[in-house]
Image (cartoon, rainbow, N blue to C red):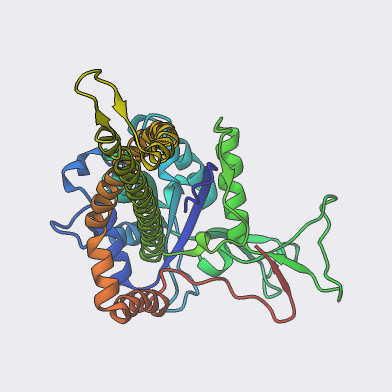
Length: 429
């Protein structure tokens, strides 16, 4: 699963197909035999773009039976409920293929991955089907980039087999043959195919824990290593191995998508929260500028009122009709001086406040534009995620219950089971 950290990681998941019904469902999905799918990511018009590196010649179960008749495989000694089918899903994050050109690059990558699958399985004759799906959309990336982006991955359905040797017993008449190989055949055995193996040190010796017990290495961990190293040798030097111990290696397809959607919802919700906060900040800044503007207008008005006293000055004194000169009383003269001083101060203040008012109006205009822009983006984002927000607000418990039910269903019906280990042994994954 992508972590948005710029690292492209190889992942291969192994699923056990236990019951005939499981095999039939996988066949319907992989070979696109259905007319409708509950998976909304599947774009049926692109089904013809899916690529078979090995196409099935019949149903999976019929091919198994044919291989058994032809003695290519053997079910000798198997229990009736033994696991006879497995599926490997090879995967890399969608961004890796998008950044390398998409479909054509994915075809070449998975053609090489199929070669790795042949080695992992033990031979192409044990592979029933290998198909690259190119018709499943990555909704999160598509919405983020504003164009269709598809999640390319490879499904390989195979028969888990190991080489079985039968030795001549002591009852053999020819004593020289006792203990030698009587016959060799490929035995169907999921448990032996994926048995845990001893972890080795740099010298190739088994590693022991502090109690002297042998440390075991999960065969699924070896599977991750093998796929990664094979692709590196094939020339794909810009990929990394999936993280050790990560549950991504063991997620079913449904769990994988549920987890991806949970993370996608959390990311979108975080974007909404950030947009709301930005809107609040912009609104507060705009209000602050509005208050400042109002205060400056009030100061300007007071200054203008003071300037109006000039009319009173004009009306002071008495004009002599003969000489035209104006005579002021002592009181009027003192009043005139006082207004003259105030007038000069008021004129300077008016100029100062006018400059402040002009700057404040310009700042208020800028903040209003920012506010309108953020508000528009916020409304668009809120409309986009409204179904999620409505569901979470209206019925949060039901939404969480739905997620829990899906995950619980997957746990009750897992697509594969981890290998069992002996008590007292450590496990390295």
